[in-house]
Length: 335
Image 1 (cartoon, rainbow, N blue to C red):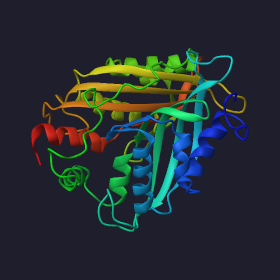
Image 2: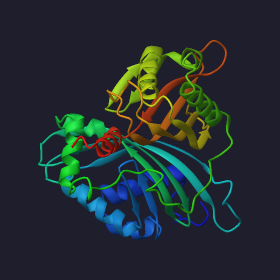
Image 3: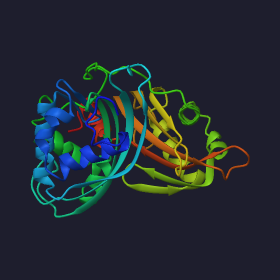
Image 4: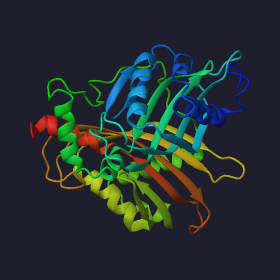
């Protein structure tokens, strides 16, 4: 890794090592180096600009969840084809974490519940010169809220009030609140990334018959709210429920990485968005007409058990359902 500290063996070692260094080893101040000045961290819940705000948010999270651990499940990465040069390598990564934590202190999630939590995070990063300089992150907020014992809509409504009401609360990420960053690429050119992107595009175009064609009959599925699924029916129910709620929304593939490594199945990571009106019955209940922006990330692993072509054997998809409900509540005034 030219341009990086020699202690990092590769991109996986850097991503997993930096994550542990910050969150578990408490080297929070290292964010001044690990995250470049002016860094933008986008999540469905907010857009944070500059590493000083990231440091503040990190400390607030650890104050609320002192025993938080972030277990690296996978890192899907590639060279950045647009930015690599002779003096310093640049890389793109999409990593998947399983987080464990106990809610022992008051904070963003309210009074301490004492609940033990397990949930996933998916994050896309752009790396160069020994630091992360652009990031997109989706946390399974609905899993956190549900495991604390709260109703999802009720908790989101309470969050708006605790943040100062509809005029002062933190605004979810939308095209209006997003900030252009230094990385504007679209990933790499790889058959597995292209296959996953095409599969998601066909699902969002209402070609639901692509699921039994592209997914393994015994596919393992991991969806928001820590909902585990199995096979064609569960995949159909998740994607149908999401698309049905936003039938006219524009679906966009934002970023694609495909990768094939020894001793690993072929993998892909796709970041995508859905932007439009909550105009249909589906995962988010009675249609409200609210304009909603959804940032999603999907990881997939492929295997050989289909009828000829490789099939999708594991899928991990996250959206932040609290950010979606926040947009609906703010737009409708149902506070």
